[in-house]
Length: 268
Image 1 (tube, one colour):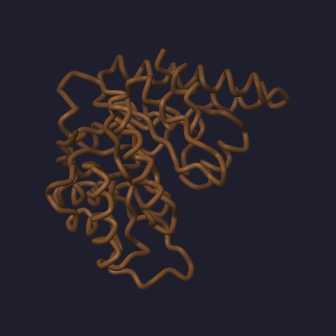
Image 2 (image 1 turned 135 degrees about the horizontal axis):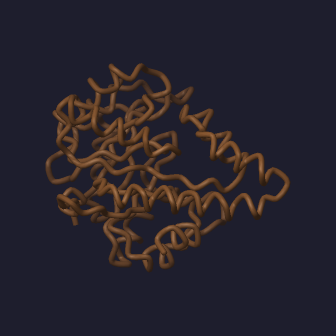
Image 3 (image 1 turned 60 degrees about the vertical axis):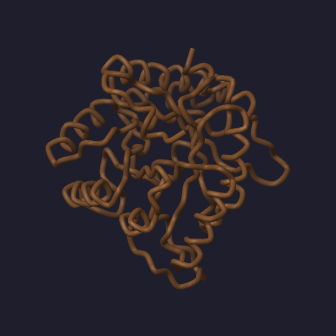
């Protein structure tokens, strides 16, 4: 099913994000599908290889849940993008999250600089989503971000999924500003539960997300108790998701960290 068809005015849909497990680890697909999310997105390795990503996405769909494969372009030639699209199509996946990605040292010369260019190269038999950044992309400035957002929409993106944030006020301001800049497609709000101090410190470094005072206090209060921090972090994410739902945002996208119990707690 095409994800763009799941969004309805006045209705908030809930979705999940997972990543291909490392080594011998397995992904609890059945448990995640049992939560009946609107869809599940599957991230891709920095190299851009979609083999594992598309295989997991196909498995999710066999459990009756629409899936979406992430796809990056900054390390790719058009020929490799075309091959990746063929593989994704062969595995029955209709939805792609088109991303720029991060440059990888030693990667083949790329034909792409921006996600917008990848979006234009994806055929119409796919439903294409794109990323947005409520606090601005870590490498850019907020005003130019709005310009790029509009260009992604004009290139053919049907919906946006936001990078994580911890203060809903940030997202509400972003959504209003996006509308003022001509964004008319749905936007799902990305919510990541605080599961450990190390996880959050890494995400802040990678994404540039700011920490509101209540998250800082939570980290300080439970600095000597990882179990209590995890529980409090999940409860905080549930509160954040509930407030977004009550505000009737288009969607809430939960970054599960491949832990179905986390998504289950938030959904409940």
